[in-house]
Length: 437
Ligand SMILES: [Zn+2]
Image 1 (cartoon, helix red, strand yellow):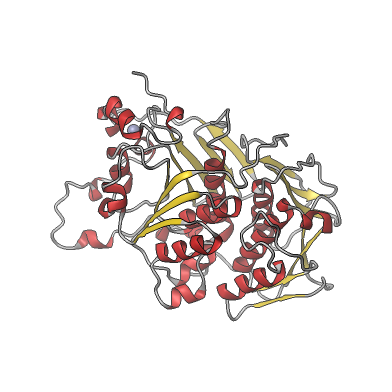
Image 2: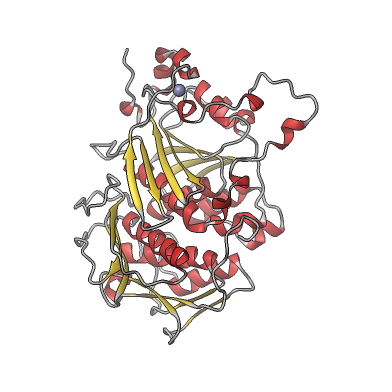
């Protein structure tokens, strides 16, 4: 974190996670507890579990296991030298409380809604299992804790992950156990791995293809819910860490290709219509050029930015803005450039050079927003929000949705709509395409 210019939390300040018992017994409450332990354990080396142990919910991965043991094992795998344990709250601890009541400051999610602030929670009780609002509330709470250095949650903030607005919404659509089809992830760094983690919390009914050439390094551990200290020690390829995680939680059909997208047979040799959704979370080797020129299915991803914001993007086939409209190709890395001196071999990612890369809650926000969109794809009224949604976490949270404009002169202007339409024909979400011809 210091390497990236951010100052870590005081390691002597213990964070203790507590929870209202009724909330902890629910699916949403357990998602909140798992994500809180995972994220706070990466943000601070001093975290205690202050809630009573309970068996993991039957609809979650690891069902029936001890929640405390599972969560503690995860935290210790991230930082073997951290001070992690389970004990009641002590005087002087910072209390991170999950639930609609039970403490003056709350981190509460129910259904697609998330709330942080003073109790009691204003959220309507949603009884269907959703988990997404609960996970979002934890990300918001962690960002508040980091930004204010353990400050009080005095200003309330409500948001929902359904249409990404600041009002609570009564929606009973549950993504738990839903069938997603074939989800390809191009780029298994912080955002791609986090998106797959959140997908797997909700459902194991999908086929996963993971493409990334990179290895897990020590600076990757804090910003992905999947990578551990042991992965970094053996230089494990990121997609192999991801494939092992997905198989262990019960995703049966997992392919991992440890190469860049343009070299991947999973991408280059795919049959038309065989990929249902593309999580395009890579940003090197001119990847967006290769994606857009390859007639992609619907693309979902989120980027993280310098000002502690994450921006969710959706590119539907036939829509006026493709990803190259937003991120014009860099002439230096254009595929036509002659690269005989080997200089192209070390094209650092944009992410590596940014200070925001050190902020765990930001990559969790980006991965969660991406996963939430994938989980909503089969909802009857999808899409539910503008093509671009920005969540700012530098101050009091800010959520803004805006349409994406077309960029004049973009390569997508020469892309043949008929070819694109036939390339995605038969894919699960092809009905969302908006070709004019
Ligand atoms: Zn374009």
